[in-house]
Length: 294
Ligand code: GLU
Image 1 (cartoon, helix red, strand yellow):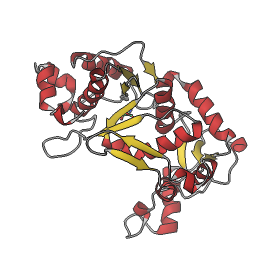
Image 2: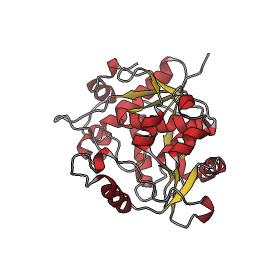
Image 3: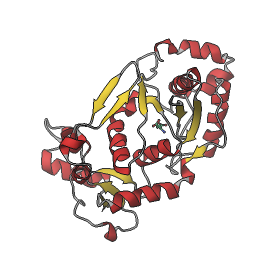
Image 4: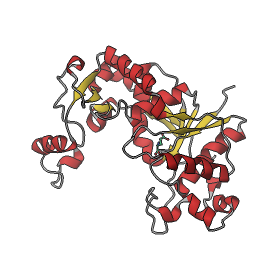
């Protein structure tokens, strides 16, 4: 029998809000109902935005909601070696190239190719990397260069388009339930050569999340449906790095009264604010209508 291990993996860049409470509790429920384990992981790779005091607040909020998790928790900021070795593996496969393009460079290369973003058929329909640095060798990586994966080479490395199109990921949530196959054309056209290490940070969200879910033996990746599009890249990286494959549960996003999804700057919806106003955690959770989730 598979032991369920789920996780809640916030980035300490602001206060947790009702959307985080929803996500954490869905993840907690899935593990608890199966007698499994729920973990908390702090995704603090972006030192430009993460703050220590938000970590303390995260633990306080989650405890107030009644959740428990084993300690010590994993902090991504302390995992540089694991990410470095994954990058080396990808590089040894001949899939990486260094990239010095700024967002502005990419936008102007794309608009030269396809027309400006605001023209029909322009930039927004072709958001993928234009391939400017694709010929460069890792041996010539300069300080501040990002690292990208050459998507076509990655597909070839996995056996070509036919082999890739039988790769799938399974979602067990109410919104996206079923098997989602990787479409090689979509990988090339939509994602293109994607970043696995930023210039200023020696990893990326996509790489770190895949490495840590594997290291922590996560069987169920629970998160909001805003991250659904990233899952194809995660599945691709798992295949390239020969990592175990979890199942996913992408859940709905909690919105405010006007239907807009909550952001960390929505302090009015911060969990701590409800606590300060005297709310009881059970009442707060009932207001989130968690019944439709497993
Ligand atoms: N750290 C991400 C966030 O706070 C969540 C990542 C994940 O669950 O895969 O949005």
